[in-house]
Amino acid sequence: MGMLKNQAVVITGAGGGLGRSYALAAAAAGAAVVVNDIDRDGAQSVVAEIRASGGRAEPYVGSIANWDEAAALVGHCVECFGTIDALVNNAAIMHMGDVLDDTEADYRALVETNLLGSAFVGLHAARAMVGSGGGRIVNVTSTAHLGRSGTSAYAATKGAVSSLTYGWAVDLQGHGIKVNAIAPSARTPMLESNPIAGIDYSTLPSPDEIAPLAVYLMSDRVAFTGRVLRLEKRDLKVMNLPSFPERGVGRDTWTAEDVAAALEEHLGERATAV
Image (cartoon, rainbow, N blue to C red):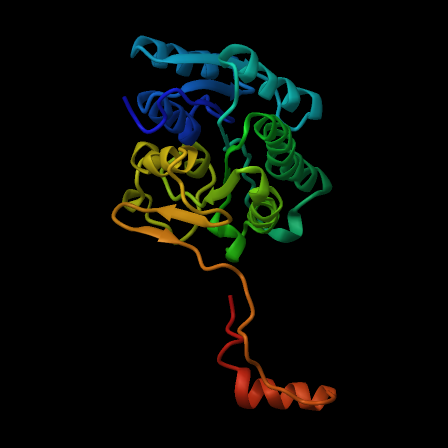
């Protein structure tokens, strides 16, 4: 039938955009899908699409930024389909603008949805997966966390999601749970409503074109954990893990002048600007 035959999956933020494409692709690959969104009409529309194609799907309307709602979302999947095999932490909000204009409300909204929402659902899902022998968690991050003008607050939350991915991969590997992340690049309503200077949107793939990566990472065929991946129109990429080189410049003691000399004479080429 497909790569996700007999699997039960939860996809957050699945009422439109990337989440919708992930949900439709998962169902086409054989999964039973819980479609989560705060937009009731969006969630029910995607469920109707899946059912019309002969798939199995159930909606769950609620905010992942609420601890109890996140638990209920995972519980709904177990109640409807008997288990939870995979989670895609897709739900997110975006914010762009002059960093000096950012407000407390901007930061709190981004952290609550993008970071805490992913953490809450992921933790509840992991606990359920431990009880059933394992599973897969797919977080959604962004290359904005590498440094992009006008996205500092949003990027901070997505960088945290990448770090969460690395940490969970280590913490959960003994429980049979693989944790990876997607850094998508696609034409979505969220991105189009927050245009980024210098990006030619006509060159970006559609959400449907990058959904196969999510399907693979949801499947029990995924052979690795703790990686961030990106599928572009033609290229599949795996991000290098953040790390320091094994060798640097050694001294028994250091002064500020020693640091300056080492960077200027030996390590300057490594200290490139973002």
